[in-house]
Image (tube, rainbow, N blue to C red; front, side):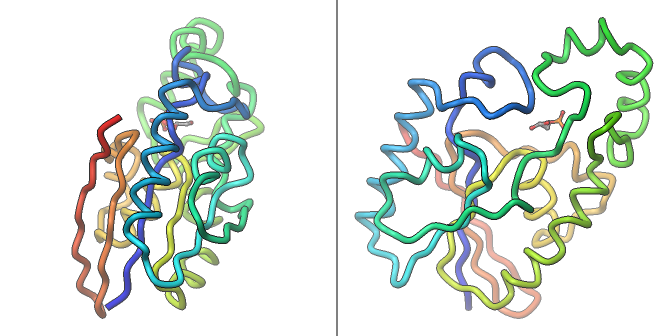
Amino acid sequence: PKTFYFSRHGESEFNVLGRIGGDADLSPRGRMYAAALARHFNEAEVHDLHIWTSEKRRTKQTVAGINATSEAIPALNELDAGVCEGYSYEEMQDKFPQEFAWRDQDKLRYRYPWGESYVDIMHRIRPVLLELEREDNLLVVSHQAVLRCLLGYFMNKKPDELPYMNVPLHTIIKLTTSGYKTHMEVIKLNI
Ligand code: G3H
């Protein structure tokens, strides 16, 4: 069996403001999660633990205290919201009502102008999934939309379910895989 750990970055300053995209720093609560995550992994002494993050500040800051080597992977960056980067959902609805309605009708395939769709994410993480097959004791710290696609792959979700999967903040999802069988454990850290 192989073991993979997945987590979203800790709460960011943009999460606090309800804004999407961007490259914000962790909020004070997010920094508390980073500290709790470091305590968790440093105490667990996972053999040969290594880490993949996205290129964003919030994922790198989330793993900064963990005693393990980490690598930043562009394919783990959050869904690119194109012209809507930095907006809140209310502002989006106000400034781009047609786009907002289209996304609501087909969240899986909807592509933000100059940005990406969930289907685009599924394509861009394919090499990551192939690489994952050769890994063990790996912690992946990424973002909500990307983790929905990664976890959906392991949990055999239908593509249309992916954009609505619940992947909460400040939670480690531990997957133990053996062949086609995947066992999932949800570890909520108290912060
Ligand atoms: O764009 C970033 C969000 O994490 C994805 O959330 O696809 O539910 O809007 P959403």
